[in-house]
Amino acid sequence: MRGWIADFAIYAERPVLAQLFLGFASGLPLLLTLSTLTVWLAEVGVSKTSIGLFALVGAPYTFKFLWAPLIDRLPIPPFTSLLGRRRGWMVATQFGLILSLLGLGASDPAVDAGRTALFAVLVAFFSASQDIVIDAYRVESLSERQQGAGAGILVFGYRMAMLVAGAGALYLAAFHGWFVTYAVMSALVLVGMVTILLSPEPQAADDAADRADARHRTRGLTGKRAALAGWLYRAVIAPFADFMRRGHWLTILLFIVLYKFGDALAGVMANPFYIEMGFSKIEIANISKLFGLVATLAGGLLGGIMVARLGLLKSLLVCGFLQMASNLMFAVQAMVGYDLAMLTVTIGLENFTGGMGTAAFVAYLSSLCNVAYTATQYALLSSFMAFARTILASSGGWIADHVDWVSFFLISTAAAIPGLLVLVWIMRVLPPPQAKAVPASAE
Image (cartoon, rainbow, N blue to C red):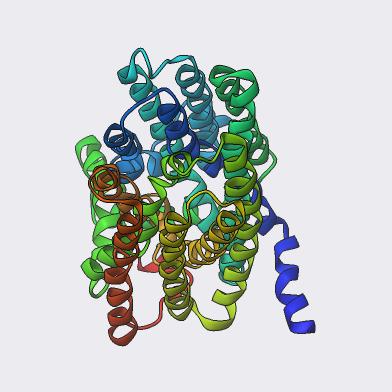
């Protein structure tokens, strides 16, 4: 019993606790361009195929590794000089997020869906850019011992934000309309801004980058052209070259793409499914968002402890099987139809297992990063994770238009199998990952 109490005490440590609020900042915009937005779209009569294609507005999450080197290395005046490299970029992206959320709320998808999509893309862009900094900050500011707990409490904060952007947004929309809803959400971006202003700038990445710079200077690079070439190498080439030096890196990327694919395929059509089953916005908010949040928080905290006790790969395998099984509950829900008790069971299992899997997955991605290139490498890895949620899952609407709901959720369950097969291969062939790469190995 004392061992479990000691395990949970790590969540009270200040660097770990800060991840709660940074997780909130990271999770707040996501539903506002995905499931909450799909409720708005379904409500005004947008087709299911079009709703599925709206998942493509999340493309910045998939391609954020393209501009991650700039965020990783370049200063952004005057924020960097005032706040530091990580904190400066975070505050700057949060200002952009506030403005784009206001623009999205002011649009009308029934009249001009293109304008709605444009502002949704801008929200996703600034959100993805913020995530680049938050992910780097987490990896750099937490010790090896704190990584699993940091991932677990990040899920806690992330899901708290999803409650606000999910249930909270639906409540507001039901009584005050969509513009007021998105205006309130834009104001809540200040939670992340205040958190980062009260937190210290991490030093680990700067020290590692300085060592990399020193190695390049010793190679005799002189002059402005050489300095520019050296910067481009360190900012753009070195992070990817460092990652590709590890064994079977393509297989690792394939696993990252596939691990959450089943969940993503089901998730993109979950709210349209609820509405077609006859559930109201308030019922969706109460069960899918409120009760689902409690289940996710419990799952996330348990997932963080599981990583500490079982290790990363075993935790990923257990959570992966549980996530796959939870998708079957949606097929059962489709057969039952409108039933609040059944919806509670379905949402509870899906969110609990999803929280466990996300905590383990975030810890795994963090373990693959070299702190000399944290922002760029984590952006690359999380971009591949987002690929399943955006590009691959965008086909969900088309599939749902051509099969019944039971078949759709059976397909989404089967979509989880390839990722688990790749994970089993990784467990047999590759050595267990370490919590952090050694900075001195960076080039």
